[in-house]
Amino acid sequence: MRNSSRSQVDPFIVMDVMEAARAAEAAGRHIIHMEIGQPGTPAPAGARRALTDAMEGDALGYTVALGIPQLRERIASLYKDWYNVTLDPARVVVTPGSSGAFILGFTALFDAGDKVGLGEPGYPSYRQILRALDLIPVGIPTSAENRLQPVPADLPTNLPGGLQGLITASPGNPSGTMLDLPHLEALVGAAHDMGASFISDEIYHGLQYDGRAVSALEVSDDVYVINSFSKYFSMTGWRVGWMVVPEDHVRVIERLAQNMFICSPHASQVTALAAMGCDDELRGNLEVYARNRQLMIDGLPGAGFDKFAPPDGAFYIYADVSAHTDDSRAFAAEILENAGVAVTPGLDFDPIRGHQTLRFSYARATEDIVEGLGRLTRYMATRAK
Image (tube, rainbow, N blue to C red):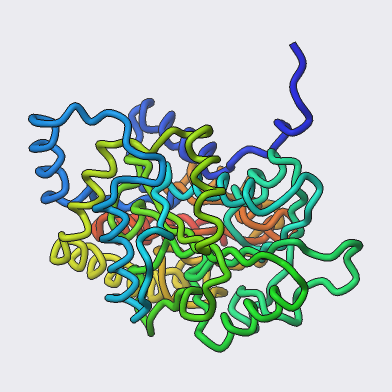
C-alpha cells in the first residue's frame, strides 16, 4: 500500500531521545531527563478532585465542538487578568492540545502550496504539520543578537509569491526568550503589511521570570493566538488547549473542529476548568522552575556549556556547543550513554544550524537538576582530558 508524499515528515527527535532514555531505564540505568518539555508535576490536585467528582455524576460524553461554555468564559477572563484585554468568549475555541489548534489554524488560514514563515530555532512540529498539510514552511534564521527571536528585517523580501503566514512563539521553544510589546507590534505590523496571517504561539505564558509575557491580542484582534494547558497548568497528557480567533473566523474553525475532532476530551475540559482556579499550586510550580533556571544558568558554564541566552520564560536553555561537536545528535547520544543525562539535539529546532546546539530542559524536580548538572560536569571534565 502506498504512502502519500504529505506523510513524509521528519521524526520529532526529542521523542526518539525520550525512547532511548526509556530503553536505558528499562535496562536498569537511572537517567536524568533534561530532554522533554514536560512539567515533572501532575495536574493540580484541585483539578484532579474536580474530575473525580464529575465522573460520579456525568457521563462525560461529547461536548459542543468549540468547548464547554464555562471553560471558554474562564479562558476569556484570563486575558483580562493577565493582559488587561477584554475578550468575547465566543472567540475562544477549546482544542485537543495546542497541536489540534495548529492543525485547525493552518487548515483554516492557508491553501496547499502557501508559504508560512517560522523563526529558527523553533518548535519542530510547526514545520512538519505544515508539510503534512501540503504547505511550505519557510525557515527564518534568527540571530543571537536578537536573542533568537525574529525581527522584521529577518523576513524574506524576495520570496516568490511572498509569505502567506508568519508564526512566532514567545517565550520561545527552545530558547525561552520573549518578544516585548514593541517587537511584537513590529512583527504583527510587518506580517499585515505583506498580507500574511499572523499566528502567535503563547503556550509558555505564565512561565516567565524576567518581565511579563505579551499577548498578540494586545496588538491586534486580527491574529490567531494559540495556548495550552500543558505547560503552566501542568497538563501535558490531558491534551487540551485553546485558540483565540477573529470573530469572523469562529464559524470556519467550528466546522473544521466538528469534522476533524468532534470535540476535545470532555474529562480534560472539566479538569482544565478546575485547574484555572488552582493558583497557589501553580505559583509553587513556577517557583521550582525559577530555582531550577538559576541552577542551570550558574551550573552549565562549569560543565563547558557557556554560550546561551538566559531564558526569560518556559523551562529551556538552548546552548551553542560548537566548541564540543558538529554533530549534536551523536553528542546527545554520547551524553546519554556516558553521563546518564538525556538532552535534545538542536537539529530538532534548526535543521541548518542545529548540529552545533543542544536544548536542556529544567522542568523536572530540583534534585534532578542538581544531579544532572553534577553528571554533566563530571563527564565533560573526563571528556576534555
